[in-house]
Image (cartoon, rainbow, N blue to C red; front, side):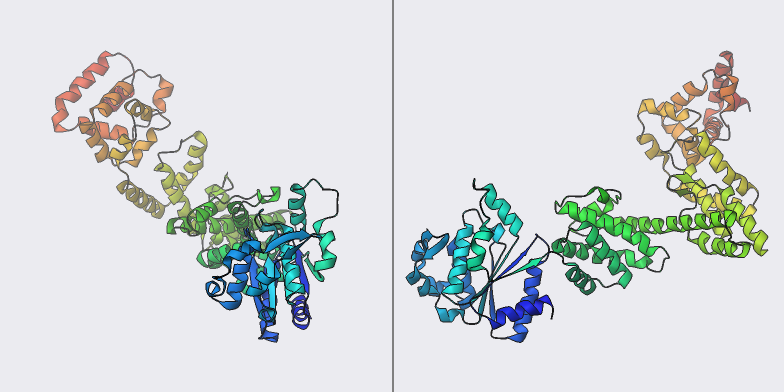
Length: 553
């Protein structure tokens, strides 16, 4: 027989007994009691439980009202003539227990009212300060001895001791439990470990395979401090994210590894949400999108859920990459043979989500081309995913070229030059590259670009290291800006008519869309004489400048 059966039998077969259930907050005392209630209802249908939660209770009046209401239904009909007497219930405290006015009590609760009744008092330590522990114990004694019913009290002994010692100067004397246990409590059931209960809850409330259940149980054991309430909350959130996101990737080889990471971080944010202290080992992972879930009534917007899915998928792909690198090392320095390594290339390369970045590290196109050549050397055929990977690099190049928020430094230029070199050697890739550029330009608006700049910022866009931004815009749209935006046109003239040394002149590429647009602007029929005048002015300056080079080229 398990503990639930034992407790149920003890309460069913005896009378005038008090059972104490003691354990830390959240360890599952109330959960255990609810299971006992279910068992009692099966073995003895006549048994009735009067469950009283003492959380915040301030007086006997509240407790009696609740007991009578549960026993008889409509409390007002029974007590309307005697409510005024409730204040006289407690006459004196003698010997540490309460002497109650029997006439008043019996006018409410006769002994027969308690036949087959079990009264359960929960959360004793969470009662109001105005309701003393001695009063509660006096009531327990009254119910047990005078009414001959069984009583269950549920509490956290250490917390009760702490609260009592805080309010008294007699800290060195016996604890309340030592004083009253012999008189009131007949049997104490202490919950120190609830692993079996936690496992049962997880298996009943999580619809997933055993491996996932084991991950949740491990998280519980490591980070929940036996708090079943926290586990139940966590399971609620796990079920949501399993359904909306995680389960979609169940077939991936590294699903369980990544799931464990995400579960741990979700549990961390769950603890933060309920003001439960976070341990140092909880802080190693950070997926901030979980915070938005708690801030938004436990729901993620479609947009945020898409981000989470993408992040989860990226995490899986990063493990694929790490897994491949391990086998690459085994191939180079261990006993992995040619054929088996080629199979790993074939299996894992299509699974890399991001072919360029991984934890801030860049993987160049030449890195992959080395494996393409090796695979072909071993198998005498092209890798099926080769073209797909190379096209992904072309997409990244276009994203880079049209991203006006990043600085194009020498490292980036050299990195992406390798992709451009690949494109130049393949006519299909040239066409694909141009198609992607054309699509990007359709979605870029030069007016929005200028609106985001203050007047003194326009001239900064002409610096050689950021002028590439103008290649993101159609030449016709830049020509239009020269026509309608006097400030832009004026600052262009000032900057590029200024003197530059040979080294600086060489840094500017006249094929840039900005220069092509200015040249087209001057070639407009309406600017025929204007172009001649500008050329005359810059020649008179008697120094080299970009504008002179542009007009005379």
